[in-house]
Image 1 (cartoon, one colour):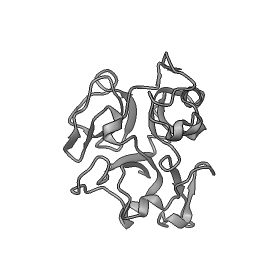
Image 2: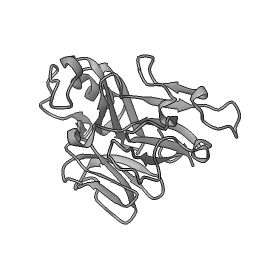
Image 3: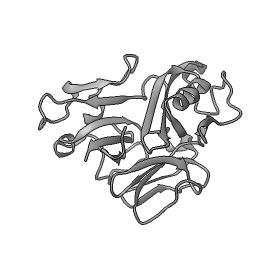
Image 4: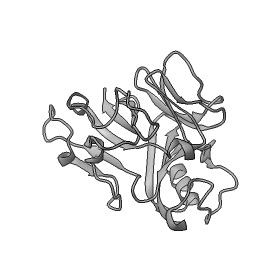
Length: 226
């Protein structure tokens, strides 16, 4: 995802991070759908993320040094890094979503990954090793990379590296949560809708309609044309 062409926005939910006062929350509005290109899942619930959450001027949970973070700035630019080293709070930061520690750093998987680990990088449903997992990385030229599929944590890290990620973090996992949907209206002035959306992989359980559902209570990220 070319961050020179796409603007990011963090949408918050009543369950994750919690609260009912968010301006940007599901469903995606008609006006926002006019430029919507991509929407994808956020990270674990805050109780499982071991990290903080900041959006719309609200600190839903304290931001922690050393945590993997997706950071969005006022101009819509987004990146992934370690909080306190690669990214820090500045007046231009409008959203920070933390989730565990970096999975990829300096262009390589972090040391100590275990193929059959079903707890350190998130609790696997029914302790299934090759469960659906998702991750987000950033390349040397600033592009964002999203990876999803049934796999172990080592494979997730390796695929992110193969895709060019120099830093990457885990997002949500298990069948019900990973989703990356692209929207392609039939006309240049068309609006993104569930009908013109498409999941990244056929194994994804959620559909492109998820982000347009009033009842959807989890956080997610959109990328829209500038």
